[in-house]
Amino acid sequence: MTACGGNAADGGAPVPVGGGPESASATPAPSSSAPESTAPTKQPSAPVSTPPKKANVIVVPGNYASNPAVQGLVTSLPRYYDAMVAKDASLVKNKFPAYFFADAGQVIVDAKVNGWVMKPPGSVVVRGISSQPLGVVRVKTCRSQTTQYWNPKANAWALATPGGQPQAIDMIKTGLGWLPYKIGPAAGISCAGVKYPA
Image (cartoon, rainbow, N blue to C red; front, side, top):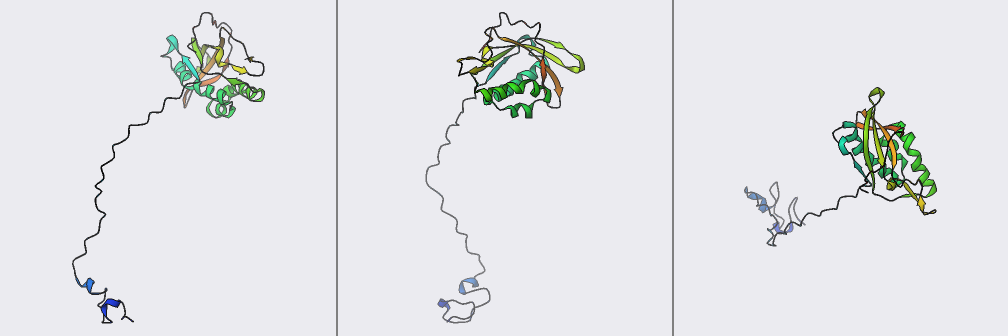
């Protein structure tokens, strides 16, 4: 049996406060650190480049690229087509003004019910702009056939527009920038001779 605080190596002798004979030294024991690795350092691997995601729609601003409303359309319209491809109307509901969702969300619901699919990429070409009351800017566009849904059961487009579909989109400035506000009247928009990149 050992004395209070002692160990078997002390032989039962009284032990000074603080431990055994090894504690008598005032010099702290050197801290044991892991030996340095002699293995060669690993060369950093080359960065993995992920190919950029292919856009579901290409928006061609044409001569109107400097217009803020057109810039807003170029930025926001791909989100709408992402929702069309995913057939998820909530993406439109959560990211666009309510009027635009009311105008444009129903086609997504119809596509989901009928089993229609998108065949991206599609393209939208800006044909003109006009100012409307209350600060609205109407952007006149032509949509390529591939911005429409495809009906696999009928093996045909849900809406056949071989020369493109005229569409006016009313843009409004919000706290998040220019966003589609609602679908405007397409009367007077000509898609004759439009070259679609997709």
